[in-house]
Length: 318
Image (cartoon, rainbow, N blue to C red):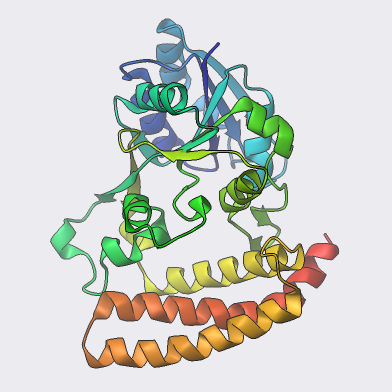
């Protein structure tokens, strides 16, 4: 068996239906789809039986797992990946639509380039609103990473040394041997009680690069991320920055950033001062998207400094 798709879902059966249906339309269908229902209010399988039947009629094996309690995205992805039979394991979110060449593009990239991990582009598909009706401060070219879109721009900019910066969790794939070496995703990266930790794919890819695994980018392995207007609000951006602050606190505590925690906090304090200056400059030139990005960075760096001790103590107590 060559390809398995792991798809984690939580309380979004309508989106999940669209994601599954897009997998039935592939030029090269996956051999297997593994759905992990992370403690949805009602079992999602009750709402998608017809689409599962469509998959099976096309020869696609479907497995469904349901957790009793919400375990978070990292643990749920590991659960699905461990039961995968395919050599190549693809991860997509339940709110994406796969392009028709997604599976084919991944297989070609793995086999031609001898890669261990492959990332693909995530483009936005806005729901219930035209592009010109989006908030005036929104620009996906600047702020897209906040809703997991336009990672192709991060890849093409070549400004990042870490491939994990352009590997988005809604669209990437790994060779199964990488999973065995790294022993899966960090189980605590995801929702834990009221803490929304994230970055499970960032941490996974960073560890993989540290082990010498090769990361590639396939520009043809495209998914379209469904973005409702509720995701593009200042309040949500604040919540996201707090969640990312907590995540980076714990990753720094584990030395993923390869610096001591105290040095990292000093570095973030200096970065916050720099953000203040840059925010003022962008405000003066009326560059709203970049002003919002700098505000996000400022809140993120301040959050790392202010929330770090609290986050580590709370995580210890879980």
